[in-house]
Image 1 (tube, rainbow, N blue to C red):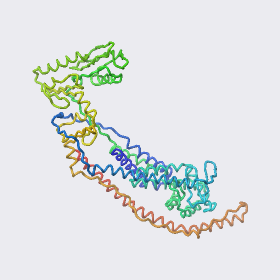
Image 2 (cartoon, rainbow, N blue to C red):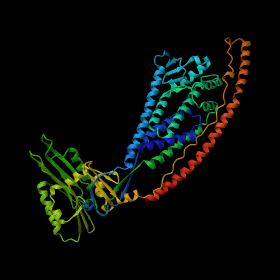
Image 3 (cartoon, rainbow, N blue to C red):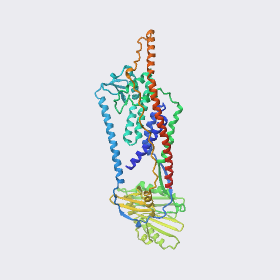
Length: 611
């Protein structure tokens, strides 16, 4: 679950990044369609980018002191439950409950939608399905279905409403609504996702208003329709509905001049922020031990075994190993197997600039004996198991008789042993043996088959993080504070002294808290007396009747003059709202600047502390 929560936190951070970019730079622009794709791209990026990692390799010095396992404090692992142990469970339960509640609300909204649509008469026109309901609901669209109550509106108002809803249907705005709802369910704990959803829905209304007014001759009549619809607040949550509480912003956007094309450069500003996110949080560091530059690969002794059960893939890996380590070509050919897939015959050819050429063969009716391919002293030697045992024992005995001035250290399964212990070891029990030579120091490291099996069957954790067997063997014994073995859970848990000091360090700098956008009461929109709204004059049926047309134009001028009486109140309200939002934006920008400075100091403090 820890990996899941880290993923949710990273995705939430990206959602915040895209929302702030939209709010601070794009929300006042009239690039409505571009804003739609920008907001959707933000959601998709927040889901996918946390999976993208850049691998960084750090070369570290080899462990100065090998691990002497016999001196390590070994205890049976017993875990005492603390509040920190229960915290992941509590967090998981809280997140799960919140998610389930929102999923239930989502399902209920579908049920409410089905209740509205069920049993209604559908009128098909082109690609649209129209449902004229008698229920007191605001007009809405769901994919290509448009629902309205014609009894609540005049013919001209209904025309405006349907043009608006057709835009929602044609451009599949329902998909945006559903996606934003699903993100709210998954990221419900992030307050920015709710503002993000509101921004998506608001922008969809801008798009529908902009496209609808292109097909409507009377723009003012459309705005009057917007004001009238505000009285019908009953709507279905998962649909594109004509009513929106931000009616003032929609009217402002309808009358706003088109943004200049060069302002589209603002979209590109999010790219360096995404790059910064990747380099700050998506770098996966892998530590690799440096090889000894004073000892060439050709001087390293290696013994590798091939037995009767080797598959073709395993033989291929052996050949790749010798090619990589010693630039020696091993070629396995004439491979024969019995009914049990055991190797009964094999030919091994080797050649290389340092080794010359050679061939080894085993062919019989029975399974082959173990084959030992050795790289010793810059030379390749291939023998079977019987010959190898004698050679290995001779080599061990010979090394004890030498009087060379070379210091020798022998380690079996990480434990330092004597020459006598090595002499007693059965060669057939050896899984791997590495011999390293450096100046007057010789180091022999042996891993037995039993020990290899033990560390392979157990999960290894170093300072709480899962590690592999190579990391375990490379760990410096002087840094180990405690090692607990839990046979029941099949785990080996190691705590180093460095980690203990870090855990108890109370001077760890705390990261700053990001600011929240100021909230508070908004100015109240001026009340509109619907009874005083003048009705537009009816258009003459006979366009050639000059007298009727003159009378119509006269009445239209009177109508427009009366409509202008409503504009001062709306203009004053708009100015008041803009002043409030401008002050809040200034406060938020100052807080963001302080937050960015604090983050810089926090990063510097953490970097100094880690170094």
